[in-house]
Amino acid sequence: MFTMSLGDDGAQLRPLEPWQAEEFLAHMDRARALVDPWIPFAAAATDLDSARALLQRYADKQAADTGRIYGIWLDGTLVGGVLFRIFDAATGSCEIGCWLEPAGQGRGLVHRASRKLIDWAFDVRGMHRVEWIASSANTRSVGAAARLGMTREGILREAFPHHGVRHDEEIWAVLAEEWRAAR
Ligand SMILES: CC(C)(COP(=O)(O)OP(=O)(O)OC[C@H]1O[C@@H](n2cnc3c(N)ncnc32)[C@H](O)[C@@H]1OP(=O)(O)O)[C@@H](O)C(=O)NCCC(=O)NCCS
Image (tube, rainbow, N blue to C red; front, side, top):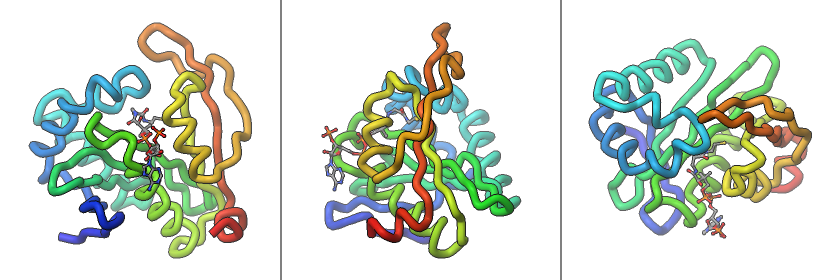
């Protein structure tokens, strides 16, 4: 029902809700090969029931103000999304996550969508800190955090076991005053 333009190339940010499970699953099937090596997100949506359940978890998080999920549409096709995996209004700290299918990569879509989420977190919700956590080996995700002007704060060595490998996790973050100064 609500859409936000991400630029003049037809990219839009919209809420992603359980009723869109079918469209989300078809998109996940296109995104799986890109997403699976890095995060267990697409693997949590392998059929209609699990796709709907994933979106319902985020609908529940939104109702509790502990998380949110938004899709990115390009020329009417769902090609990726951004989310608040964690949103803790009490401490003023939240974490953004993201994914794309191959057709969405390399266009700055996650960059532009993440900027909207960060603006909202700081300007509307008065949050203090936005985090981004990625495997050190996930150079595209690390590049996205750097492109947003975040600071690489540290590495949790071998903290994230995924597909039989223990990945180093990089913690990136931007603080409200840094975001405003850069803007
Ligand atoms: C991580 C992921 C979202 C990054 O995608 P991405 O397209 O590189 O990210 P961005 O939105 O920041 O776009 C940056 C790219 O678009 C280009 N670009 C084009 N227009 C742009 C614009 N207006 N603004 C910024 N970048 C732009 C940049 O040059 C860059 O491309 P390059 O690296 O080839 O030079 C994607 O690789 C992905 O989905 N990976 C699998 C899931 C995943 O790892 N999720 C994150 C888990 S921590």
